[in-house]
Amino acid sequence: MHVVIINGSPRTCEFSNTSKILWSFVKGLETEGVSYELYSLSNLKEWDSARNAFLTNDKIIFALPMYVESIPSLMLEFLDTLSAERICSAELSFILHGGFDEGYQFRLCEKLLKSITAQLGCNYGGCLIKGGSFMLRLFAKDKVERMTKQYTKMGISYAQRGNFVTPEAKRFTGPERYPWLVRQVASFFLKLVVNKKFEQFALDWGCYEPLDNKPYEFASCLESTIGIHY
Image (cartoon, rainbow, N blue to C red; front, side):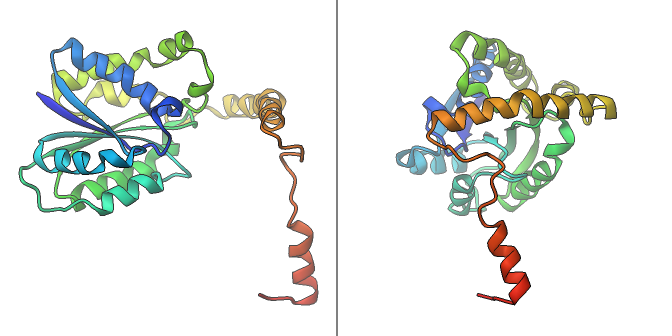
């Protein structure tokens, strides 16, 4: 088997969580003797090669981060350049990840990806979904390897099955939705710990306004009160 993998992240490989995930995933492919070619859409020089590989191979994986319940605009732009008239039939699969932990947060994007598959004239090979990847690029290499090693197992699974329409892929997502009590504890933790981290990041990056600052709120209220329209 030979697999074409296209990294749909707009970030360069050095800062891309998707790249870190793929580094682990392809280890699984290599374990099973599966060859692959990998393209990154953040490198515009690779678009022609990625487009040709998409049209001439029968096993294709798009890997991408979820942005606001959808796919990155850079990847959308690339998809617009693809023809639905293929040189050979293909099975198109996806690796979808993001900061949310619960599976239900990804279902709308998953539905969109399935629709895109049909529009591109391909058969749907399933979607490997996993949350909790937001902080990957901020961790040291050894911790990143520990967090992503589960993708190596899914690389082996893909090499053996040829798609993500498997019980292993379904279990890989984790909980569809956490129980109410767990959600409340998580919300408290976010407010107490994670928001403090974000505030520190903002300071390090030169932002000194509060993260919940609403600079246009007063102007919006004023427009409503005196009937200003633009």
